[in-house]
Length: 476
Image (cartoon, rainbow, N blue to C red):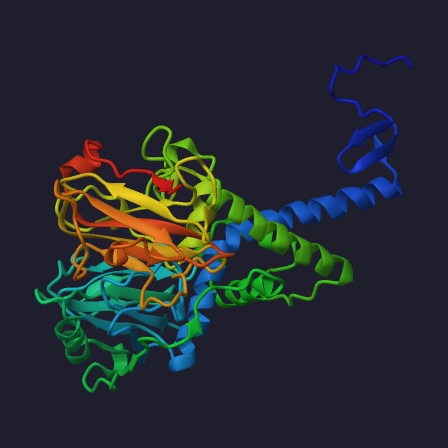
């Protein structure tokens, strides 16, 4: 032809392309019907898997919301694990050292006043699991307690004085805090302060606040962990319908829209799409497990050739130079989906806490509940307050359910034995080694497990890595 020019390499499509989807056929670059079907099925599947991984944080919040609201309405029901959470409560990465309190907040009816009690440490996260504010020691009240005023999205009326004002982007959110044991190791005084001083009420009722309902859920069975099957998508749709679209970035919402979850529209996938979503949920869950148990981000590991690793890469929001670290984001909300805060990552000498996890032994093998392992903590463990170690179920990411009241040990436990040089040995296995009963955490044959080491009031040697925990070794 008179105006024909050469096509540079890499632009034109060949008539046949062999891919993992099979052979794709084209007529002069136009895909045939069979190829189009394969490509759309694959595209929907890919987007569904990515949507699953991106939605883990939010769906984990819905799982928690549904569990909390079993005990009473939002805003008016404060759950307290007065004698600490036991393994009967299925809840990610909990510990047995401090009592937890948790309340679900709904701002659809207007501004809400939350009176935080003194001497607690906690967070406010929105339903997308974005950090909004700390409360307590690391919050604006500095541990003295204070009145927080939560304003719903779009609120434009006059704001009264005398409050710590918080402007979340979503209507739904949770407030979580922990209180502390007294010098005798008793949780009751701290819990009593919470009962006496915590208030939650609409701003319109500030002159006559309604009574808050306190529920002690110590040792109660209920599950706060979200489902991983098709119900996952129904939980996600619930959030998308309930929250403002500008509360989340458009690309993530675009992934949700591409699989049929869009604000103001019914979620009604056809049989083809339902099958894709079921498979994507299964693969999404499997991928989250791979990212969690076999993390490939080298920056997550604290030391070379070590199994110990942080639950964060980048900062508390999993951002590295402004870029979301996707693998770290997924694993964090798979195993510890209760929330995030800058206080977890900050270097606070003698204050706050530091958490690290281990998912494999010193030789990189998964922990086997039928075998016995040993963890050696060298002398001069760098804590101002105390340390603890807790064992978790790989399936639920919650405390392992055994014959022990808690699958955990901390340095304040009566009877726990230090070595002569001040070092500590912790044993894991189905039976206690002779003479080590007080230094032993029970595991279950036929079940795997993982563990977290917590340092409360970490000291300089921890941050400088002049002190490091031993690897967890199989006892042969």
